[in-house]
Amino acid sequence: MFRSKRIVRAMIGVLIAFGITACSSQTNDELLEEENSDLVVIGFSQPGAESAWRVALTDSVKENFTEERGYKLIYKDGRSKQDNQIKDIRTFIQQGVDYIIISPIVETGWDTVLSEAKDAGIPVIICDRNVVVGNENLYTAFVGSDFKTEGESAVLRLENILEQQEDEDGQINIVHIQGTLGSSAQIGRTKAIEEAVEEHQDWNIVSQDCGEFTKAKGREIMAQVLEEIGAENIDVVYCENDEEAYGAISAMNEAGISYGENGGIKVVSFDAMNSALVLCMNGQISVEAECNPLQGPYIYNLVSRLERGNAVPKITYVHEECFVSDDLTPEIIEKRRF
Ligand code: AHR
Image (cartoon, rainbow, N blue to C red; front, top):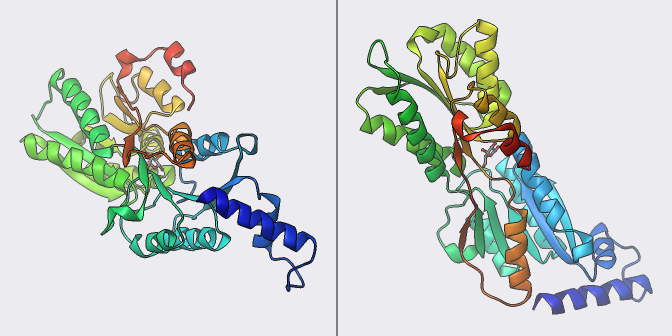
């Protein structure tokens, strides 16, 4: 089906090239079609570039869908707004791309635009974060993280660390810096820590605020919390990604507060980017739950199977681990690609 669509596009390109069409000038979209008539065209919509993790995801997708392999990737950055992502997806539909890949900023609000893609016969692959839609047939497949499991793994490692230390007042006070509200990364990781707090009578969330997955917000929130609550009343800062953890650590450094495995506030973080793993190996970050951005090969595999007319699984979770200092060596970190 998609092959024949490409042949039609190629013919349009040839007609345009010989001036046989009624139009006096070519639009950008027509030029794009003409240039790439034999390539499989993929529209890739990212929510923004808020973190080094997201840049790693973008690179992974770009590295896999190359012209040498027969693909043309059109990349769009939604600049942290769902409305921009929806506009970008509508542009892909108008351009008649062969596939659309979406990393959705939040879970809800996609039904209409996904219906439009479905009506246009364009398969959609959701990656990284998931969507919640009325009809799951609106997209072909999901590839990404199981954020609740990431959170549960982090909580388990935190429990082990806390069990090994005596807390003076017998209470574990947690500062919770959340990611973009409504994103599946925030929802899953938040659920895990909130459930753990319900299970442990001595665990308390003393502050909960949205850090938008950025270093600047993480730093701002932590600085304010240190001032309002005081470091002596904080045992853990649970940051929903590495950028927020870097920000929280900057705020603690600036305030001269000790943190990490040698005493002081325990830092829990998600992503496990190499620079954060170095901090974890050195005991400054206590727990690092991996969020794997190398999703390009998984998505490539799905698209190749669809191109051959094969069925694909609806859900593919990427491989992820969780680390504490003892799990890490410089060699292990060096071998990793992000
Ligand atoms: O959806 C994945 C999350 O989004 C990553 O944890 C974070 O760094 C990114 O911005």
